[in-house]
Structure formats: structure tokens, C-alpha cells
Image 1 (cartoon, rainbow, N blue to C red):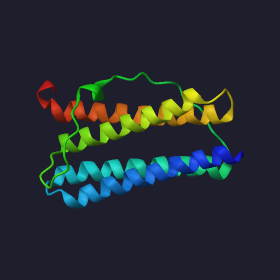
Image 2: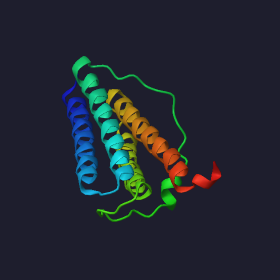
Image 3: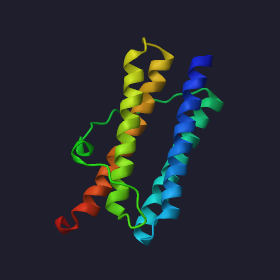
Length: 149
């Protein structure tokens, strides 16, 4: 595997580790059990992302998935401050905003790459972040608007 690709995958692994650490730190900070549970769930997802990218690095494979469509829910959300009394809804908004930022970051990198292996890998990273953001927005809809159910 090309050195540039390995470095890019390692960066994705590092970002997943960082996200996991942020979510676990926040889980230890907050007082509300339901917020703590939400943040622990998010940390677990990031661990899965780290394993996915590590597998790509170890096995030199990069499977592509079916593209998702961005629902753009995050564009209407304001990022909350981290507090001990943070609600699950606020924790989800914070996570959605983080995923949105990482999605844009990988999309930018994808767009500046010429066709080839690196661009294909970045395309996969874009899809992973979009999928995670989509999941979080779906959960957010349930938490933010429980009266709909």
C-alpha cells in the first residue's frame, strides 16, 4: 500500500480514537444517566470506525459502499456547550456537529485528489462519516421530538 494512503488511513484511525476519547471524557463529565449512555454509545461507534480503518491498513483493502444522501439536519442545529447537566439531545447535537465537520473534511480531501486509490479511500471515509451523521440525526429526531411517536 502506498505511503500516502497509509498516512491517510492512520489519520482516520487517529480521528476515530480522538472522537472516542472525547465522547468517553464527556460521558465521565455529565451527570444525567441517559446522556452518559448516549455518549458511551457514540464512543463504541468510534471504536468500530477505528477497527474498520485498522483492518483496511492491515489487510490493504478498501471496500466501497452504496452512497447515502445527506439529510442536512445538522445545518439547522446549534452546537451546545459541554456541561455536567448536558441532556442526551445536546450530546447528540455535539456529536452530529463533529461528524458533519469530519464529513466535510474528508469530502474536501476527496475532491482535491486525482482519480485513484487515495480518492477511493477518501470516498469511503466520506461515506462512513455521512452514515454516522445520518444515524445520529435519526436518533436525534427520536430524542428531540418524542411526541411524534
